[in-house]
Each structure stands twice: as structure tokens, then as C-alpha cells.
Amino acid sequence: MTGFSPEKTISAPPIISIVGKKATLFLPFMSPNEQLLKTSLSSLPTRKKQAGVDRGLRYAMVVSIQNEDDSYQEVMIGRQELFEKRERLRQRTRVLMSQIALKKSNWERKHPNQQFPAIVLKKEQELESVWQKVRRLDKEISHQIASETVWFCEYQGVKTIYFEDLRSFQGRGGMKRHSWNLSTNLWGMMIDGVRYRRESMGHKNGGIWLVNPAWTSQTCHVCGTHGRRVDTEDSIIEVKGGEYFHCLKCNQHYHADVNAARNIMQIKQSKPSVVPGRTS
Image (cartoon, rainbow, N blue to C red; front, side):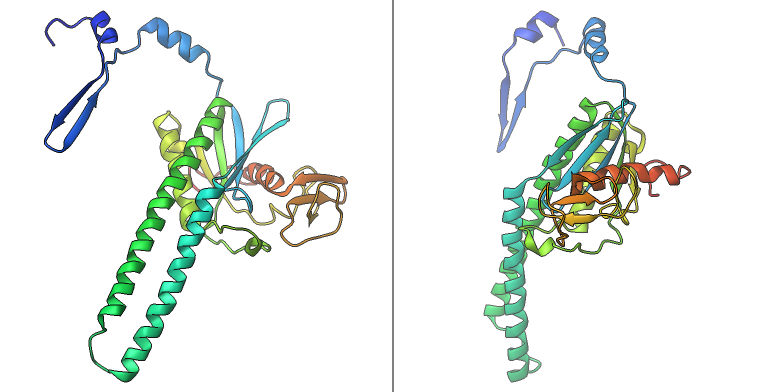
């Protein structure tokens, strides 16, 4: 570039180039010098910590990070308004599929071997349109939640993240009480989003492990004793799908999803030979 100088690049205004229907925004940028890199990188935390992530009943992701002094830091990440919108769309797909199946059945009974009428084709087009909205919404949900998860873990200096592996997923008790149902497909998109972003930050395989979540929601992360789900922090009456976990041995209450996330983080201790980024 003729006449290039860092000073001119910094002070130059952004430029919008329009060619046909395509608009391109050019922003001035100068690569950081050695002093800036040293200042920025020296302030980053050392990546030594571990985190466990649970698919919560009331939150998309519940992240628990264990500090060097054995204390914990948690964040509950949810996009309730997006999940509610998603559930409304999913309900619409169920209604449309039922209508389409009924209309096809009636038509085939009355007009065998004949092409379906326009009303059926119109319903099928509407169904596909709704499914496209669901897929776009899933991408937006996974993008937002993965981004928040990655930045929280990066800020706290997390090296390895343990997710529950939902490939053998079965719905938990109490799920129908809540306004959204996190599917295994969407959960997988979120994990892939976290892995991709962390790989771009230098983590091998994203520093991701998938672990079997069996019993993580039913045992105490402190003593390993089987406990019960309750509705409030001071209740001892068992409730299916309760928001809190009560350990009878420790006589302590924990948020159920936080307790599960801490258990997920500890599963790796029993199978240390598993390849990072894979499953255990």
C-alpha cells in the first residue's frame, strides 16, 4: 500500500464500499505491537481450573468452576424468552403435523391413488416454514449460550470443561412442568459451539470432555450419598423434579443443577485414560 503509515491508519475513518447489492464495511486496523501484547496477555488468568456443565431444568447451561482453594464459582445461563418462543414454534409443528396426517388419511380413504389437494400441500409448506424458524432459532440460542459459556470460563482461567453426554438421554422427572425442553440436538449444537470457540483460543479439542451423567442429579457432590429433590432451600419433602437437592447425610441444600454440575466435574477422576475432547 503506497503511503501507508500506522498513524494514518489509526485516524482514518471507516469506509463503506457498495458494489451492486453488496455493501462492505472497511475498518482501520493496526496489528498490536510487542508492548501491547505483553500488557494484554499478562493480565489473562492462567488456565488451570476445571468446570462442570449441567443441562439444567430451568437453565440451558449451569457452569460450576472449582477454584484452587476448593471453593466454587457458578453461573446459570439461560435464554428463557428464546426457549419459550421455540416451544411455541414446536407446538405449532405438532399441530400442523396432526392436521396434515388427518387430511391425508381422509383423502386417501375417499380418493385412493390420487394426488393430494392443494390444501394439504399448503399445510406442508407452512410446516416446513415453521421448521426453518425453529432451526434458525436453535442456531441463535446455541450461539448466545456457547459464547457466554466460553467467555465466562476463559475469564476464570478454565482449562478443561466436562459436559454431560446426552446421547443416551432420557427425559427427567418434572420436565413437563417447565416451559422448554432442551433437545439432545440443541444440546449438541451448544457443545460444538463451545468447542469451536475454545479451539480458536488455543485449547486442544476445545478442552472438552463428555461424561456419563448417570446419578449426577441424585447424589451429593460432597459425600456421594443419595439425596432427594425438594422445592425450596429449607424443605425436606421430596418432590419429583424439585429445584433444590437435599443431602440427608450432610443436612445441606444445594441448587440441584449446581450439585449436578459439580458431580459432572468429578466423574473424570474415575476414568483418567479417556482422550480429551472425547467421552468418558
